[in-house]
Length: 178
Image 1: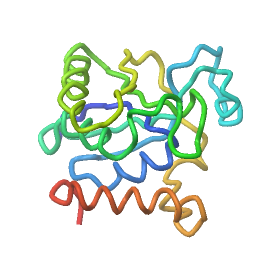
Image 2: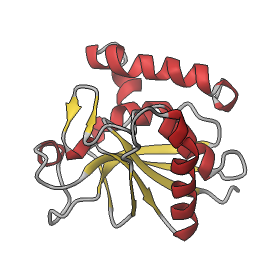
Image 3: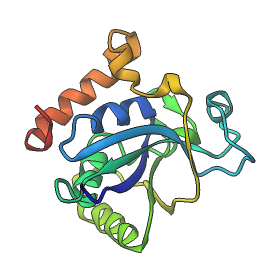
């Protein structure tokens, strides 16, 4: 049985990030949720969307490091959203949509910092991705899980997520499930 590891990242709407990582070889599970805030108790989607909880929309990725490394996960993450826009991804605006990597241990922190440095030259603007220790991960409501798979014909999915999946397939074809 694999010795699974966790990665927790936020790149705007968690529906997008979840859909991308569900396609990646070595990823066992992707759970949408919230992290990084200071509101007491488990937040709701409505509370997080208000921007007052401090939480970001994130996904927690369970992966097999024998099949995909944490570094590869972060490279895919950084390449499939805009890490140069502060508190924004496309039309989604607010701290809940910030670009963030929540590390689970010191090794992940060091890898995250090195990936950001390695990718800096590929962006015209400075990378603003937050790198912070994971405190608590709150799983989002059930209707947010597998959102793209369950709602792929919905307008937002067609307009925002489907193009991201096309980009993923162009950039990382060798890392994707068939």
